Image (tube, rainbow, N blue to C red; front, side, top):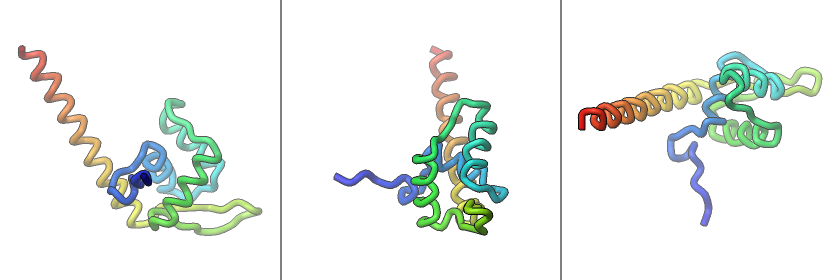
Length: 110
């Protein structure tokens, strides 16, 4: 059975989320990896194989685009479609946090 692609389902994996967020400004692969690690305070990192697999999927979904090639380095940036997906994911995560907070509050009332 084929695995569902989270992009097709409208959800972003943590890797997709951080990659898209890092591409608010154009970056090449190595800078994307460093940016992801820095913005997560070292709690999330992505290796080269996972990064380039994710980049291919994000390109295919038109969430990012290749902007230029500099000295054999491909530079990517988020698209409007990618920004919309990132905003939707942020809202989805906010709802998830609110549901969890409500569940904990209900438990404390018992």
